[in-house]
Length: 143
Length: 70
Image 1 (cartoon, rainbow over the protein chains, first blue to last red):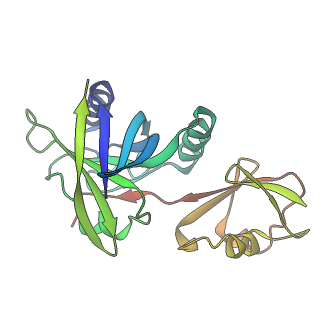
Image 2: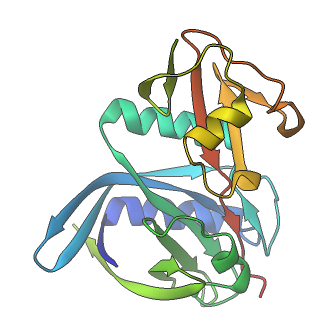
């Protein structure tokens, strides 16, 4: 598992986008750097990508592959590593659903879920998913 | 021949197909992977008949999705 560090501005960008798209789910990618420290892996998010949810659904999301490709190229050009993805749960808690777990193919990724269930108190958590088990990671919003 | 796979230059057999490259690269859960060659997405049904050429740029993109439904 990793500790994830996210800049406050990037959190706000994610939140604003998710609020704009609600009640549909919003989604995107995160990229940055990864360091192995004594305490474990630290993932520092340098950029949050806002991608189209091609499902346009209140309960599902799929990233647009063309936008995904463009984001991957941007990460590569910037020297960043793909760190995972994020999506919103407009009306449910910040926890991995069965579908989130089933479709989490990368055990080396962080999966961020932003809950807008309480409109005034959004909740963002990061999860590690491996062997069908989702475990909450430490997430630090800084700056 | 040389091609670029996910940003890395690789030596592969002449005329290798997308399916063969996926096997060679040990792509996991290939049913959830989209493939682009020179930024054009290849239909899944064409993976086995699409032969790669010298200098091609190939990207494997894992499907990313999920949702709040249980």
